[in-house]
Amino acid sequence: MLYNSLCVCLLVLCVIGCSTDSTDDESIFPVPPIISEEEQEVTPPGIPVEIVPPPIPQPIVKDLTAPKLLESTVDSGRVDPNTDVISLRFNENIIEIDIKLVNDSDVSLRWIPSIDIITGRRIFLTKMNGRNLGSDRKYYIKGFVEDKDGNKTSIDIEFRAVEENRDRTAPSILTSSVNHGESNVSIKIDQFVFTFSEEIDEAELSLVRGKWNTGTDMRWTRFIDKKKVVLVKTTGKSLSLRNNETYNLVLKARDASGNWTPAGNRVWVYEFTTQR
Image (cartoon, rainbow, N blue to C red; front, side):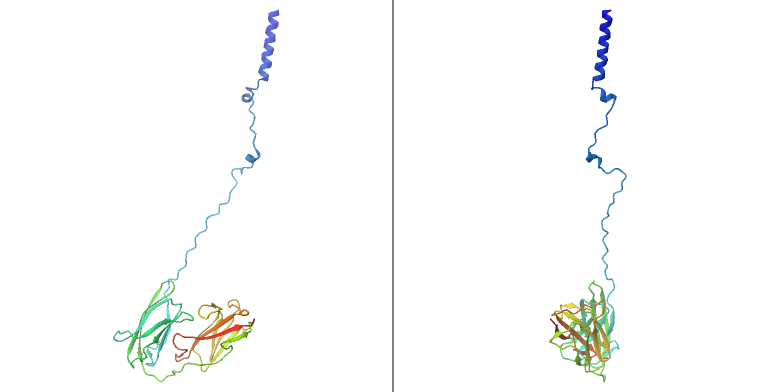
């Protein structure tokens, strides 16, 4: 009897001890891990993320067209023996030139080439040694011109020096709407007018803020009206005059007979100052 009671007590103690031992609890009933707030904020998979592609480099647009000769003072194939300037006009600015005037024996004459300092689209050959061209002799203009992108145009023009009864007098300026050296000029002016002694066939006229050869082109528009050369402010294109600034009107003009004023690679400059 006593033996049986002792066995029952030992069995009860063993059951109690097994139920309170925590060593094997985790293997029997696994507990989920504790997740921190930082770990919970991780972007869940499947959310699209915008990837900005690198900028695509833009191709450099380069002019591949060579300059085109539009006209010259020897287009008729003849020129007066007394002429001292021959001009050639192109459709774009010329950056480099290598041209010369030669006779029918291919001997180079002392005519100096230059680029028009107003627009850059015209080339002049100017007589330097004082000798006229020989009457009824053949002459040639040879060489090349080049634009800013390196496109070259070959020049090979033949003409004769022929004595002609033609107008050799260059047009003269009779009036101008602003005088050289004038001050206190109104900034409300929207046009400048030059009147000549005869009808003008071609002219170059520009308005420049600051130095006439290095300043800012105001982008006004030039018109020819018989004996008048007019420079007009164009809405949306032209720059406006400003107070207390120095400006220059740069001008040259030609009549129908090809006489330029001033002659050669020169210009008229009218400097004025606006009101304070």
